Amino acid sequence: MNVIPRHVCDIGKFDRDPEKSYTIPAQYYFDRDIYEREQETIFFKSWNFVCHVSQVAEPNSFVTCMIGDQNIAVTRGADGILRAFYNVCSHRAHELLKGCGKAKMIVCPYHAWTYHMDGRLRTATGQKRVKDFDMNEFNLKQVRLEEFAGFVFVNLDSNATTLKEQTGDLEREMRSFCAEPEKLKFAHRLTYELKANWKNVVDNFLECYHCSVAHPAFVDLVDIQKYRTKTYGIYSSHISPPGRPDNTAYHFDAGEERDFAAWWLWPNVTFNIFPGTPNVTVLHIMPTGPETTLEHFDVFLTDEKPSECEWSAIEYIDKVLQPEDIGLVESVQRGLHSKAYAQGRFIVDKDRTYISEHGLHHFHSLVLDALGDLPKVPK
Image (tube, rainbow, N blue to C red; front, side, top):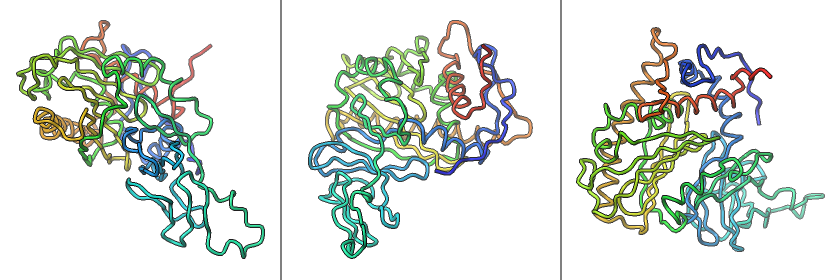
């Protein structure tokens, strides 16, 4: 992979202490050099979300994804084992699989080199005429894969510690709200293209300081006064007791007053459980440029066909909550270019109430540390 040249970035008044700190400087949200460094130091070295296990449950099924400019395929072989590969032919680098589906073998559209679903090269036309041609040398190049709480992740860094090691109690905590997420089924996908830097989008998720102002129906859905954010290692939790079943966001039946529970996992995925029937929604925040982001909001339910109440919750997310948030982050993105703005001050109170932005400071610390821009703590 290309090595991105290192250049000095001034972090200004950012401080390791959230109660004293300012936000990261505006340039971190639009500078192309910083964006390129993020690809190498964050996304190519972290565990990246791909899909739910149900989406690759059957032998010979596959899904593809992009991590920056790297095309990755996840396949379940005929032997039932999940594997991940760089999704390019070993001959001349033509892309192989597209989207998701099932295939008995992988055939390159360029010169018809053919691979087994476990990545082994099966045939390469003319290879018997080539001196010392080693079939094993041209197997698809494997990527590390891990199943976590019913979801599939990949990591391009062969030396990374496991996701389970890095996340500590996250899976246990998630399962305390949804005991068997692996048994849920993919029910719906919402897709959005945002004119905003990916960190701007994560920032917005990590604080509910704006909720009372921008999300009146969400405030009605949850008990906002008891909404709390806690930070750990590479994730944070965002938990609140539910509001009323007859709230203004969407209706759920009495007896389904489950807590609102959400977790952000470094660097760019969130898992959310909304009040109502058993569910997990996954917000995948994917950078596509210094100031553009693609979002997938995937819904997982007990049945592939949402009920009337479940559809009303999906419509609330799609028609109300997401437009509210997208309007906010796109306005912020434009404002970050103002000559009047350099850094803001985190609102962090000692009691870490619902307005506190310590979760946002936690994220900024991880970004700066990954980029190598955070000064070392004196020994």
